[in-house]
Length: 577
Ligand code: ARG
Image (cartoon, protein in one colour):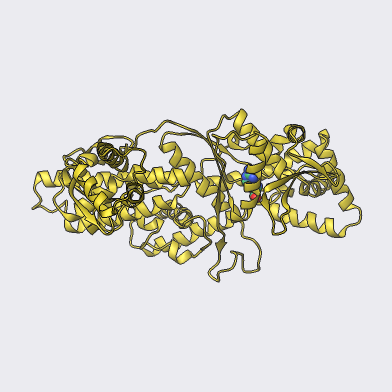
């Protein structure tokens, strides 16, 4: 249970004592310390119901609520808010419990089975920056949910099927016929795709052969499938290299590409037709979505089968929903793609619910994200205007970090510097992305993300190593620290308040799939620690033993919170840098 929940219980009880039931109990974390740490703002909503002034209601609640053990001060504010100032011994107790707990005081709720649809690159091409966000925002959210005790089922819905493969397979089959090996032919997927496209557009007869390949592939022709398999295997290997560089926990078992649903696509259409959800329209099968009408009152048209019989992205997504409901037995689905697909998922959900593929209790949450922009505010591209390969971008991050680290004072060997550069460079790219509210576009800027100041990965990684060095100097094993925490100063009050809100923040991230909240939180923790440490020395000789113990405990809890938080975001830490 977290503090917000404890407070909610107390207010619910107070309301019950006043014979008020079924009222919402809104409690928020306050943003300004002078207003306390939490704020109850339910009096306004009650005013209407009770036909009383909100301030009068708040006053009565104040008289009923029992918070002596939690709050040092409660105050009525504004039109009827109640500001709650937590008391120091309560904070110290919670912090002490968190310190003694392997999971830093984070309880497991009733576990849900949560499908996280993430990364999902298209295998016809090399992974480019567009899939950075779906990979790392999805991964961080999955890790948060796991830390909270849920069962997470990752689904990498790779684009491994469809018409563009006809062109690629025709090209590959020619290359192999001239005894080239698949690995070499496909060593650069981007080049390969470009070559195939040039032939498709210019070479007589090639387009027809490409189409033949599609038909053969979709009808299950063995030779064609074998060729396709070679292509897919190599392309998956490319993505795996990127996952490894990114330190993202995706494996082969998580891959459930579009092709995996082929066998069910006919059933999907049959079922939709039988239920009259889909109807024939000019040779195609479509669903008219009455819930979404245009200006002239015409319903949106959602195609599930093309007039030639071909299936679409939408058909596959409907089959995926059936699989996730019936086989994976999911309670919740989260899907990470860019915002341009919002309409597709909205319509897919409506159709799936109509057809009963998606039971009412199972959620279908599209978690959209904005684009990565260059410093000029335009979509992020190479100088020559090409899309940037993710793999190249990550190599550049490491190189840039290496140059930076070489310039900083350190006594690391060259090999050690490279290790640090990997952790800092990759961490910087990931953190820059994760720390922005995902729904907006963001500017990709090397200088800001690699800075050791501000809300960046290097700043947090450095804050962590600084605390580690305190323990090295004190010659104390951080993992074993358990000294009694007492709070004696404002900076300690502020730091422990932050530290005990870890679970609250994780829950919020898990609910909304918003890892940036965790980033902001970790930045606040690190900053609060810096202020604490400046005002409360630990290693100085005039610090008495009890005080030193208390401060070491607070430092240890800070370091563990930072490390765990970064780990959950998929970002590594170092002992020294
Ligand atoms: N491969 C798709 C793309 O790159 C994303 C797939 C997302 N997941 C899904 N179930 N449709 O745009």
